[in-house]
Image 1 (cartoon, rainbow, N blue to C red):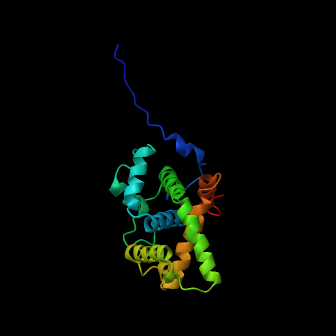
Image 2: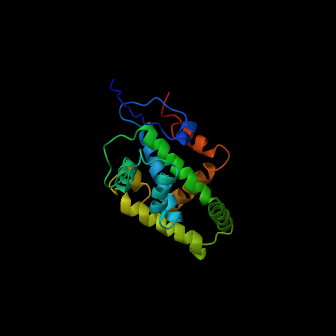
Image 3: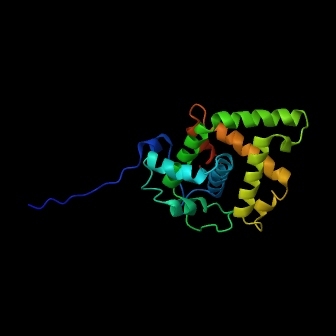
Length: 201
């Protein structure tokens, strides 16, 4: 008697902690795709070699079946509609979950630095001191502006909003707050749910 062997692929357990949402055939909503990529952009500006750390985490967290290589990671991030080379392919729920897990894990590693930058930023704002007087803060903001401008399509209305350094700096700091938010108690779950708030019924 011939026994037919079958192999089943199971999703990494870490993804089970994030609830499912009903999606259309188009995959994750526009805002969800946009916010995920911007968070990863902020991590790259904070973390030199950030993309390498993302790929290392893929292996550590057993996410290789979802994000097989660097090209796939780029394709997933390029579902952000504001990208210069935006991909028309949908971002599935499981792919979005994998990216959020990466964001949360890298965010935890950066918690101390992130919190210090936010505290210093608030102090400098109160004292009306120029941000370029703070080396680490100005370095983060400069890298974020450079990443954003090199990767986003300047003809998109959503990009034109951030045409000035001041607007981009505000976005960069807002992303740091969100990154800190998603590393607290149940932070990954709360961040995940926030990505779909108002997007699904």
